[in-house]
Length: 251
Image 1 (tube, rainbow, N blue to C red):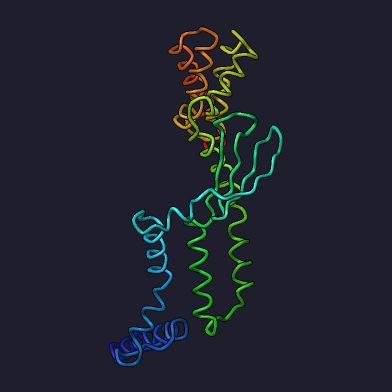
Image 2 (tube, rainbow, N blue to C red):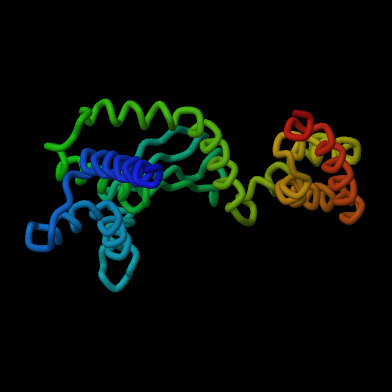
């Protein structure tokens, strides 16, 4: 009797789970009842993004050149802040930032995966608009509210990445190292470990601090005529000290 009761409870649980799935996904269909069509529609967000990525990334197709074309464009001059440009392919550009000839920034709006995911999401809304239990506006509001706090951290990380990928005289390391060396002269040796401590204090990592400020220390050492090895050693010492009092380790 006990075994029969357990079987009945299991069947009841399985039935309730199946009813829940049917309520969310709809009743299951056989192959002859439009199963293939429904499978294609429900997996559209996955294969739709894959198809768009292939079309826009394979150079032989020819779409990539169109989406990343930087001309024709109109231009707005912001003085010493740089020259703003917007092309017909919606490529945002800021050139000669702070009067540095090689310090440029661009944002290929349609080409970036952000737009592809957003476009696929919009198409999915249209395909399943009759099955929506919430309005698209409510869905967008929920997504925006969830992304509000992470976006702040991501914005800072993206700014740092954009700075670090610059090279030669346009690199922030070269600019900061040269300016700090001109300001402090031989006194830069004193603030060298403080710079390393600052990096590890905010990042929580000695390695990240060294990767971020090692080039600054190197260029400053060459500018003021100090041993590069000694300057990098001060950077490592400061980064290790800052790591001991960073927020991650304290909390």
